[in-house]
Length: 285
Image (tube, rainbow, N blue to C red):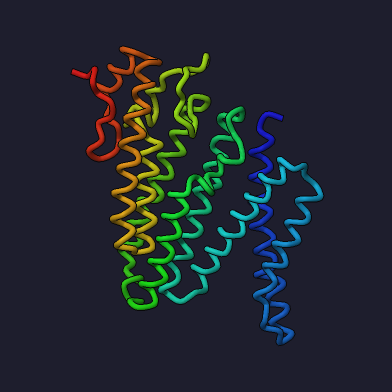
């Protein structure tokens, strides 16, 4: 089936939301009414049952998709629960967890429904690279340490709002880029031009040449504003900028080979989309 991978991921994610809510809002209150307050194990048990259920109904490749989508569903739900019930200094982290889960789910769904031939388990981007995982862990450590010693610095609502807006706009820009490019979008820089590869210049690509990179750049900065991590905010901005500067430079070399003068004209009309990044403009007068 053409969109089977996407449907499995979406169904598994929604199922995780439903089962999490069922436990939290029906079973937990019932146990509390019986004077049993030690319910922390319940969600872990529910997740374990989901894991076994998935192994029973899907083949190996589909299990991998479903496991990741269920995991993202549970982390999304846990983030919302933390935001709704935790003390103020923890609410930001709950919001961040839900936003992070949404990003990885929609990253997979975006490819699964627009370019199903290119989708694979890596399309979730959960373990994109050691650098990506390391950056995420460092941001968590900074949040925990600063919250422990400087709890008040994690409660500036204006900064959180700015971060939330950046995350939303960045997420929308990246997903619009995937949707608009369809089969022309790929997570990996292409070194050979495919037969159906066309130059996309309409929609969000009329605003900037690299909307997927621009969206991810602003989204990553937004996550650190939500966490109110001053150190990682600066580090993310610098590292992301350097990564995308090099990536765009390398990618545009191949795009110029693929599309020649058409891409040169496109470069003249539309900016790259990230601050102070011009791309490979050797042929632009």
